[in-house]
Amino acid sequence: MKRAATGSLIGLALGDALGFPTEFNDVPAILATCGPWREMALPDPAYITDDTQMTLALSRGLRTATDRGLLGPKRLERPLREEFVDWYQSPENNRAPGNTCLKACYLLKTGKPWEEASQVHSKGCGANMRVAPVGLAPGLTDEQRAGAAQLQSALTHGHPTALAASDLTAHAVRLLAEGAEPTGLVGLLRSYAYENRETYHERWLGELWTRSGDASPRAFIARGWDECLGVLERLRDALRSPSPETDPCLATGEGWIAEEAFATGLLCFLMFVDEPLTALRRAACTSGDSDSIACLTGAFAGAHLGADAWPTEWTGRIEHGAELREFGALWDA
Image (cartoon, rainbow, N blue to C red):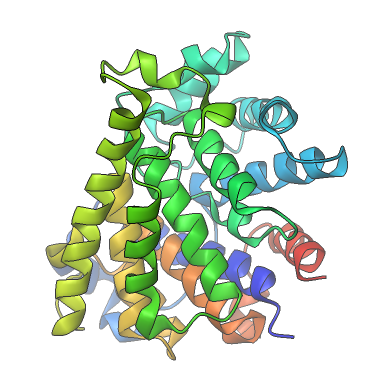
């Protein structure tokens, strides 16, 4: 067994920790501090950020929901709300968390319906950076996986592009975990986006679309998928003539918003499919949201290559490594 779930969860945490010190810096500043990007070392101690913290929160909520029976929106929303509020109140929530997550989780804490807490005008990357567990958990139908990916986004980031990018990210992780060839991945993702372009998961999202000003639920969700399709075009163009020594953000965006974080993280992985540490280092040495980009790169690389992709001298130092491996073992089994 390649242990795809373990590889993906450990990989995303390693990318998160590697990109933590470089976030908010441009590439020249990173090179001046860290030296050549291909030789970047994992910080010691290897602290994670809110990216992995919220991935673990989602993992716990998803485990609780599936332990209680068939996964559905109400069964997922209740434990997920509790986990997100616990994260919001945690003293460890001091790793430069995003404003959208903070505002939405505060509103969730007050007991407001999640639809009122959702920040419908935010498509920040805070939802799809944490969605990998939805792509890794076994036994879900396509409808459950898409609905869960979008609902976990909607609790904080209710913009249609945040929903679509979270769904697309979970789908990419799932495809790679199941053995899809990386060379055909972009084509598979484009097909998935076209197939789902007008699919509004009303069972999971309720009347969220009415808070956006769109004319219909189909128009609402299509707006998000269209932005994802646009960035997939940019990704396909970048892969036609890849430039490993050039900042990937110049091709697919700086990653502060959902669709760009997805595409730039995927670009770093696809440029170095068989060199996962090089992929992480390239993702961490970027001018944008380096920890989130590298987090996504690690999730993709680990899902594709499995747990043995990561050297023990790195994995043994990652913060919360035991809990990450616990979830990996659960879902790999």
